[in-house]
Length: 359
Image (cartoon, rainbow, N blue to C red; front, side):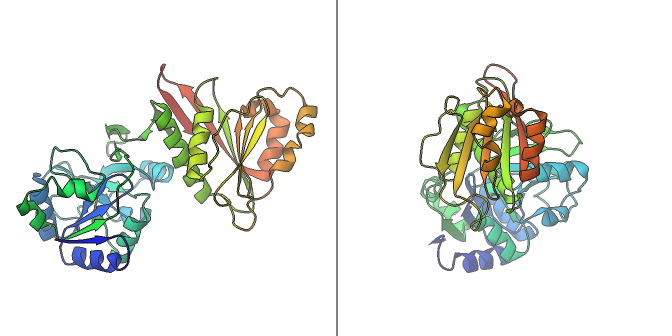
């Protein structure tokens, strides 16, 4: 077994090993994974033997994009919607397979789990190979996943170590759970495994804790920024009852953007401005700022005018607005002319669970 760092010629070495049917341990956006070529029967057999896993229990694969996924699984309106909502991200989406992979990858019922990880190195590796790789967690069957290469290797016997052709050390990973597994093969959405983010029945995610609400905020802002034109502002309008997590959600956004200051509720001073590491929307037009507003105490059009409210939404501006309903329909329409608006609704499911749904 050769061990290398995620620097220098790692891509060339990993691509060569996988192309030749070898087994590679690799860091992902969740945990360390075991990557082989899922179309190579010899490689798949080696993976199954390493994992002590029987044929018929599905093994997920990572692809670079939706186009690559369409070559492997049946794709309809449901798949288009779920992929667009959740990927790239910490989700595995299970659909009906097209039997384009070696036996042992699809489940006994013919389904296949697809990942598009939010990990530049995996996407680079898959792109260089121009084919998918397996994305099963680096652990023996039934054991816990690993967040460092060292901890994983310490669990292995000498015989198991010999089965690994290459291990790529990406350092200690954040303690994220393995991906949430969503089965949509029957036309309905069923959660088979809960990770850090859990999809609701519509365009939504479900949070059971403060940390999960923050992670949802970080996940969604990356997705929204990737899809926003740089010549407009981006406004996130957060609606929901008091105490439902809107400010916590904003803290997740701020953390993703590299804001160093503590995010507090702007209820009394109406808005706070925070410096981000880089301009969120455009290096040329963005101000490198996150504006966090709470409109709860505003009561008249004059108060909005005194704030110079509409002057805030210049191209490249990122604003998070709590209680956007206070604007009223006329001002709301003006904001939509100057910005791309994402409406995010927070709804209590029970005392500790919230559904966060976005437009």
